[in-house]
Image 1 (cartoon, rainbow, N blue to C red):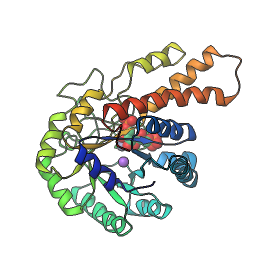
Image 2 (tube, rainbow, N blue to C red; image 1 turned 135 degrees about the vertical axis):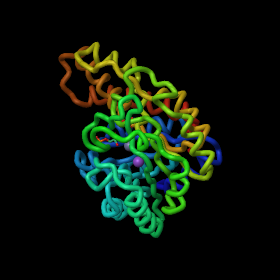
Image 3 (cartoon, helix red, strand yellow; image 1 turned 60 degrees about the vertical axis):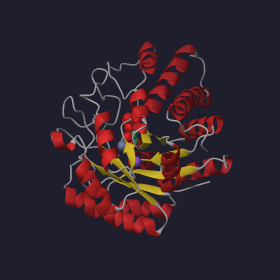
Length: 328
Ligand code: G3H
Ligand code: 13P
Ligand code: NA
Ligand code: ZN
C-alpha cells in the first residue's frame, strides 16, 4: 500500500532502522527494488527526480510506482519526489499522488545556486503547509552537498550546486538545524556531512575529515525527534567499477560512502538513505559484461534481465545492512 514517509520513518525510528530511498527511472529499477523488498520483507521508498520525470515522463513514473503497489500489495511504499526546486513543483507532485515530497530550499529555483537561510525557511514552510493539508510528508534540506576535500559540489550534471561552496555550507550546523525544523515543521531533514551526488565523491576512502559521521551525532543530539536524511549515499562498489572497466568502460579511481559508515549514521538518527549511483553502476557493469559475453544476442530483455539482477543484489544488500529487512 502507498503510505506517507512520516508513517514509515516513525516506524523506522521506533525500531532503530534506516530505509534506503532508491531513485527510479525505468521498469528494471522498479522491479529490482520491489523484488528485493519482497524477498527481504522490507518497506520501500522510491523517489523520482526532475531528471527521471524528464526521461520517463511524470505519468509513466507514477504508474510504474502504482503498478508496483498493485503487484506487491503487502509491501508499504512511499512515492517520493526527490529534490523539488519550488513549492509549485511540489504542488504538482502532490496533485499527481506522491505521498511525500522534498522541497530542497538549500538551493534556489535553478537547483544550482546556494540560497539564503531565510529563503529556505520560507519555501519549505509554505510547502509543509500545503503538503500536510493533503496528508503528504515533506523532506527539507539544510546545508549544501559537496566535498570537504575540495569544497566542490558533486560532478553530476542536473541536480545539485555548481562549483565551489563555502566551507560552512558543507556541514549542517546543529543549532541552525534545530531552528529550521521548528520554523518549517518538516517531517525529515537532509543534512550536509561531506557527501555529494554521483560517482565521484572521494578521491580516496573517506576518513572522519572528509565524511563527518560526527556531525550526524551532533545534529541528532540537538534534535533527537527529527528523522535525518543522507543524500549522496551510494557506496560506489569497487567490484562494479572493476567489471565496468574490464568490459570496455573507463571510470577513474573513485570512492563512495562505505556501508558501515551509513550504518553508524543509522545508529544516530539517519532514517532515509538516498541511493541512485550504485544502481546505475551495477546496471552498466551487468549490461557491459552481458554484451561482451553474448555478442550474438540482440533481445534487449536478455541484457535488461542482467541489469535487473545486478541492481536487485545491491537493493537486497542495503535492505539487510540498514536493518530495513523484516519490517514490511
Ligand atoms: O539527486 C540526484 C539523483 O541521483 C538523481 O539524478 O537528476 O540524474 O535523475 P538525476
Ligand atoms: P547517489 O548519487 O550517491 O546515489 O545519491 C543519490 C541522491 O542523493 C538522490 O537524491
Ligand atoms: Na529526496
Ligand atoms: Zn540527493
